[in-house]
Amino acid sequence: MTTDTVISAQNLSLTFQTNDGPIHALKDVTLDVAKGDFISFIGPSGCGKTTFLRCMADLEHPTDGSITVNGASAEEARRNRAYGYVFQAAGLYPWRTIGGNVRLPLEIMGFDKSEQDERMRKVLELVELTGFEKKFPWQLSGGMQQRASIARALAFDADILLMDEPFGALDEIVRDHLNEQLLGLWARTEKTICFVTHSIPEAVYLSTRIVVMSPRPGRITDVIESPLPRERPLDIRDTPEFLEVAHRVREGLRAGHGYDD
Amino acid sequence: MRRTLPVLTVVAAILVIWYLAAFWMNSTWVLDQAARADREVGFAELVSATMTQERPVVAAPHQVAVALWDGVFGHAITSKRSFVYHGWITLEATLWGFALGIVLGVGLAVAIVHSRAVDMSVMPWAVISQTVPIVALAPMIVVVANAVGIEDRLVPKAIISAYLSYFPVLVSMVSGLRSPNVMQLDLLKTYGASRAQVFWKLRVPASLPYFFASLKVAIAASLIGAIVGELPTGAINGLGARMLIGSQFGQPLIMWAALFAAAILAGALILVVGAIQRAADRRMGVAQ
Image (cartoon, rainbow over all chains, first blue to last red; front, side, top):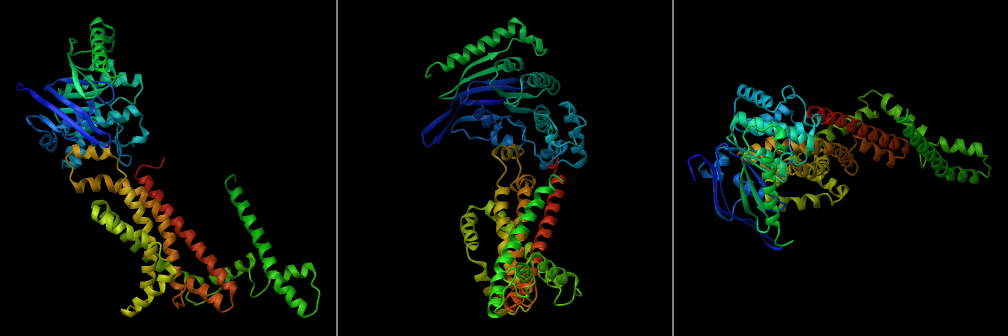
């Protein structure tokens, strides 16, 4: 663990007790996330990638091992508003306008009105939704709603962004566009991003490191450092380097999946 | 036109059935009278005789309309024979009961959602409260109110009315306050929101559509409560009292007209609540 480690998990395990016996959602997961990293977690359903993200966010509580966020416990980090969380669905409040939704965390955290306005304007500009603050969520497309939810997570300027398959429900074209925007946003804001996905091209395109996970029990099977430069146009996905990384991810997924089905 | 035609068709069908029923039910008396007078009655005479009786078994629609018109417009609105006078008395109890029912329903729902103990102890009683026939309970409430020195009849009627109207509000508000999903709750948790903030920022706004939907049921229940509060309790004012007096003192036309006055009042109240609901929907960005 070095000085610029933001998230550090040591032998993290999480077992759910169910009527059908215990389920090992996570087993002995150890990982350090450095400041400014863009880390993707990829793996089949049930591999614990979302559970791991939720442990970082203090939305799940590990049964064994330890996790620190910004050097503090996950709970303290949550109380210090260390991270913004983007869920699978945009989950905007239908009774609030886009601006009102972005304001929500700011109201809860007690920012004053002028500061709220200022920050709302700034983050809506970041996600290219300027001019939409008075619209209601149903007036926006799915991709725009998800962008608004990212703006909401960015509004209070946490250093860490935790994203749980944020683009999973969107079509390929919208997804490409949002991936490109997300990289631009990451470059401008220098945030640390943890990103759960089950799309290999998305993981490879976005990440500085790709964490491959496998189920039963949920564990890390491979951590791949991406050789790609930080500046990535969309057509980098046709280069041999890109395809090689993608190939390694696919191999990792296959190996992790091999033993019980 | 495409929307009014089916409505008019149904209304016309009801009128036809109603006239037939009036003819059929009232003809027995006409034929009886004729038989006693040893006289034959022609069909045309029979029809006209069944439609104009002073104490019909089934009042014909036009008779009810005339009685209703007379009740509403035929007297000064302060007259004891005016439906406006009696309607206002019933409406007053209805609105008080409605308000009381909303306060009680919302208050209990908030307590139930925040405390498992309250949920388990209060909810079954709330359900049981609705299985007790209100006509059996109403006189008791009136007697008790009288015994503790409340002279004004408005109070027991408002209580009876609230007894009926709190329940739909309670049930809807419990669902509404619990309607936020895990993700919405998790989101607020990531902001470190307090319980009070979760309540005001998420649970309350999420419950409002449920609340307004329940108001339509509650206002109708309130009116029924107020009328029931006037029926078996010796009241002499109010639409309920008017119905009872009409049926007990051989003035069926007044009973029928009071019944329709109550139905029209209920329809008007529901329209008002519906308008409030639509305004709220627009305000919340739900309406297109």
